[in-house]
Amino acid sequence: GLTYLEALASGLPVIVKEDNAVKGLITEKENGLFFNTEEELIQKMRIIYSDFDLQKSLSKNAIKSVEKYSKECYTNNVLSLYETLIF
Image (cartoon, rainbow, N blue to C red; front, side, top):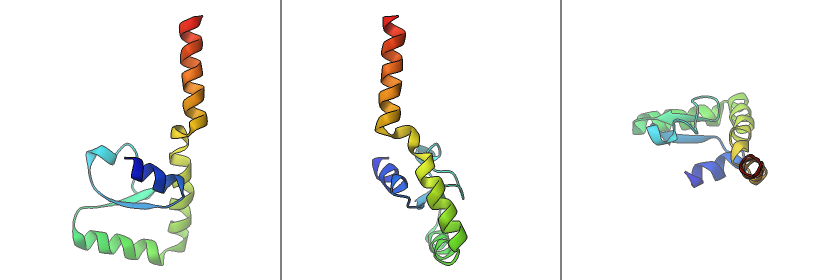
């Protein structure tokens, strides 16, 4: 999971083997692509390599998709929890 987060935070679109463990983190054609077979992996790599607009879109969305894991967001969530518990 951390490897995917780091890649996305760096603006890298990811190509991942389809797996329920990453379904909540990766959204097809939003911040990455899924594959099931070696042939699909090659096809998805060619698609990203040849489609500059898709590259830009995936990259932009990749960064947005991990904002909820930022240290600022984490800190705000913890502070909110503490305030709820104290008051």
